Image (cartoon, rainbow, N blue to C red; front, side, top):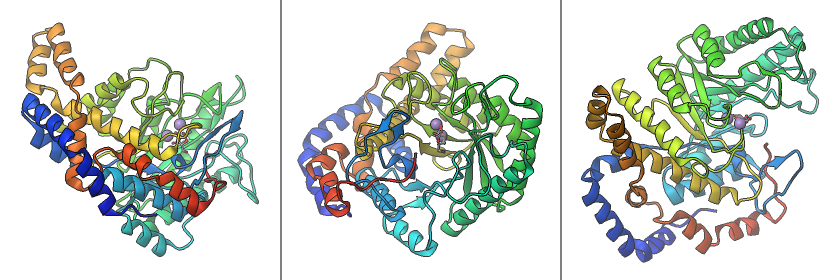
Length: 424
Ligand code: PSV
Ligand code: MN
Ligand code: MN
């Protein structure tokens, strides 16, 4: 299904008068709408293929209807999102769930929808049918060299698929670790993992990056071999210039100061990218901004400050992606909400009066520094985000149009009630 431009234009016409009023008020209030709009328009958030179907938990799965069953359908779904918000211009694939059997055709299809291929993801946390060795006790860390070799070869195969599609990065998230004290020699597991990663690194094309993603717990519950940003940074530093740490917001222990982690990684030149989601307890994969939007703003505040200080490009020098997969919402509506929450936090952080904040910090004026941040955070920037969409040809109210245009019903018509996505 492709959303007709006339449908979007018709929707915008109905919404325009109200929007214009709100946008004009905000422009006057902030006095810097034009500059922020340009940045918002350049900012794209990649969509992971595994977020397009409802995820399950170990207690069950409630599949939605009309989910994308093939890679082509996943690309179509991201195409729909991008048509609606003009800010989801990339898809991130997970191998072997998304093997592109005909890379040229897949590339063409993506291009028709205005999509690029974001980071490729390997999977050594599940055993696949006919696989020679099991990952039950880890993959790149495994005590058995044959298992490590299999996992290394899989990662190289993922790079090769990515090369064919024009992707430029590999994200490695490992479930490796241990669930009971005594199970693992931490030093040796680290060393084996490093040597495995070095072999994968050696297969990276010159213009590629490798992102080492960390996670504090799950599926292993005593230790994770890449359990926090310190361990990820150790790997990234030892691997070389093409290796970076990837921050997934859900992968920290409760109350971790993620904004400080991000600021320091960026300062070290080792922050590679993000997986956005939100959580109350752990890796809940909830909609971005649904639980703690202030934290999201504080993270973006550090990112904007750090990127500007280093003369980096907000849109292109880091990898921006959503990583969520949950049980009960329509995944496309959820993703529209997530992208908007990211854009809102980004726009708010662009509103921060940097010079005033720096002066307040220099004077140790703690109350004023907080006032400056909250002035930006409490500004309702949604009309700015909507205006950016409008200028790019997207919909003023994407979810409203998704519902009024009966997009899910059309997808069910095409794919059937029982079409289930492959993935988490
Ligand atoms: C598992 O926690 C996970 O959500 C990681 O965040 C990865 O990025 C993702 O799965 C896909 O492998
Ligand atoms: Mn992730
Ligand atoms: Mn996760």
